[in-house]
Every structure is written in C-alpha cells, then in structure tokens.
Length: 211
Figure 1 (cartoon, helix red, strand yellow):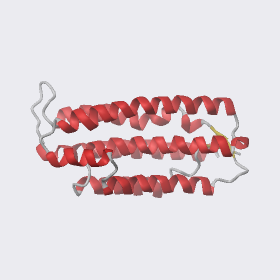
Figure 2: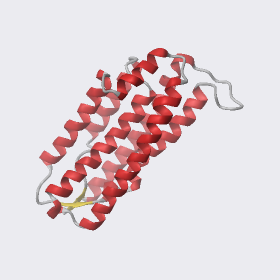
Figure 3: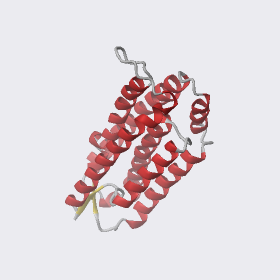
Figure 4: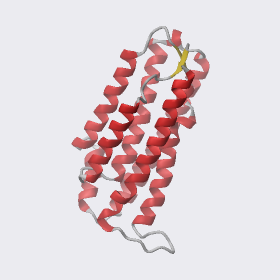
C-alpha cells in the first residue's frame, strides 16, 4: 500500500478548522490580506519541511527516492520565489500603499512574528505536521505525489487572484471605479477561502483514492 506524502494531513476537520480560524481572524480585524497569503505560504513550506524529515528519517519507505529528492529541491526553489514575491508585492507594495495605518502595522507585526493571530495559525500548522509524523504507519510506502507543482496551485492561484481582487476592490483597476474602502480586505477574503477549500478537499479525495 502506498500513500502520498504526508498522509491524513487534509482531513475534513483540519481543513474546515483552518478555514474557520482564518476567516475569524480576518473578520475580527486581527489580520489582513498579507496575513492570508503569507499563512498559505507557510502552510506549503511546512508541508515541504515535513517531507524533508521523511526523506532523512524514513527514506526506506519512499517508493522512488530520486524522484522524491528532485521534487523536494524543485518545491523549495518555487517556495523561495513565491516568498520573495509575497513579501515584496503583498508585504510592501500593497500593504504600504494602503491608507489604513492599522493594516500596515499588522503586516509589520506578521513579518516579525509579533502578531498573535498569525502565530496561533502557524502553531496550528506545526502541530498538524507533528501529528502527521506521529500517525504515519512505518509500514506504509510513500510517494512524491503531493510535492509536485500542482500541489502549490492554491498558493499560485491565490497570488494571482490576490493582485486582481486588490486592484478591483481598491478602485485601482482601469475602467472600474469600485472602492470598498476599509471593507476591501473583507470583500476579497471569501474567494481565497473557497479556493483553498476546493483544492484541499480535492487533494483529500485524491489521497484516499491512492491508499
């Protein structure tokens, strides 16, 4: 029997809890759009670190070690590129072009890990990855399926959608004059969560079919 790496990460409870927690932070004013994109990045990064741990401590369970290693290198490289783009575009350009000083301060707090909401969300992801390793059966075979570029599609689509919706909601898109003011970030949160739910649930279905 083989399974994608890591197993059982995308249980429905975990997916819904992460979504509810993120929406709660946004709608209570404790987070902004940078929070959302950045926590998505950390989600994928910690999944990759988790896979790296499997690579060194459970390599005998990996079906194709060469492919697994190559997928890890490619994934870390893509995450590095995404990190630069996220910090520069969402953390600096978009955040600091806002007139909302509270949002700018929130972004700065997130970057230096002084934002309680962000830190709690990050802790949730870390605990989930620890549970993945504790619950993984040592007799299972592991594949590199969830290390492919396709597994990063949530982050990729979120970045593109984030720029588009920010331009639209802030009234900066040429030909459109929609300005939602302070409600802009609340306006764009729903599509992000829906996209992540769709991709995570799809990955969950794929994982279960492969077991």
